[in-house]
Length: 346
Image (cartoon, rainbow, N blue to C red; front, side, top):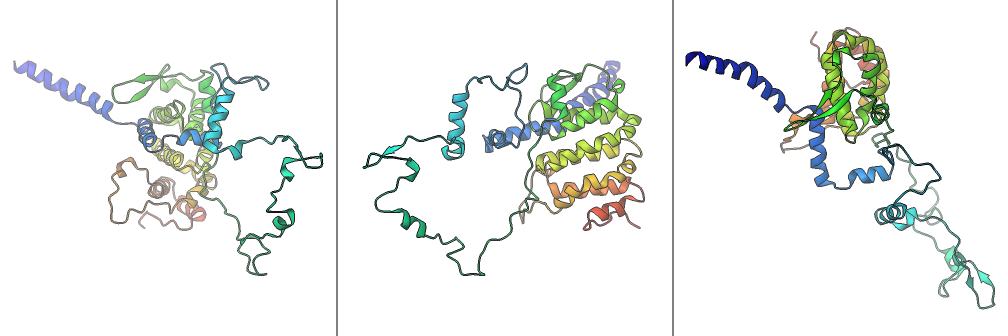
C-alpha cells in the first residue's frame, strides 16, 4: 500500500501536474484569439469595415485563387447593395449620364442645369457660406495646416506568410485542445532551416485575421524557444518584417511585435547586441508612441496581466534592449528616443 502511494504521488508530481500546467497556460496566440472574441461582442462589424476601407488585406476569392479580371463575380449585386447600405449611396454611386429634361421651348437641357423657380442661377452664385474666404475679413482666415497623421493606422499589406500558407508550403497544422489551439509541426522544429522559415513567420506578425495570425505568432514563439544558436545568424533578415509590423501603427500589431521582440532578445546570447546597428529602423515608431500610456485616473486597470498598454510595453522593451545590448545600446537608444532614461545603475 505504501509503495502504491509513493508511485501515485510521484506520478502526480512529475507527470500529471507539469502536463496540466503546460496545457492550462494561455499562449500569446490564444490570448489574441480570445481578445478577438471579446471585441467582436463590443464592435461586431469592425473587421468588415476595415476591409472595406482597405486597412486589412482581402482574402482569396476561391480556394484556387482569385477570379480573372473579366469574370463576373458571384454575388456582385448583393455585395454592392450591402456596401451601399453601410457606406451610403453618395460615396459609392458611379457617375452616369442622366436623361435630359424637356424645356418649355422644346429644347432639352441636362438635369444638372435644372433650377427651381424660387432660386435662379444668379441668386445661387451670390450666396456665400460663413466659412468661405470671401465671407471672412482679409487676414482672419482660419484655414490651419492639415493633420500630420502620425498616430493614424496604416493599411496592412498581405504578408509573405499568407502567401506561403495559402500554397500549403509550411509544415504546420492546427492541433485542437480543450482550452486553446496549438501548432502540430510536421517536422521537428530543431531540423528546420531557420534562414528560410523564421523570416516568413516574422513577416506574419502584422496579420490580424485567423488562421494566419495564430499560426504566425504561435510559430514564432515555438521557433524562438527551440532555436538556440540558429537564431543569431538570422537576425539581419528579421529587421524588415519587424519594421513593417511596427510601421502599421496598429496598436494590436505593435503590442504583439514588441512582445516577440523581447522574446527574441532573451532567446539567445548576443542577439541584443546584434540588434544595436538596426535601431534606426526599429525605434522611430516607438518614439512616436512612447507616451501612449493608458490614463485610468483613480480607477483600476484589471487587464494589466495581458500587457496590452502600449506605452508601458515600449518602456519595458527599451529597458530589455539596453540591458542586453552591450555598452553601445544606451547611446543609440538615446539618439533615436531623446526622452528615454537609462535603467542601468552606474
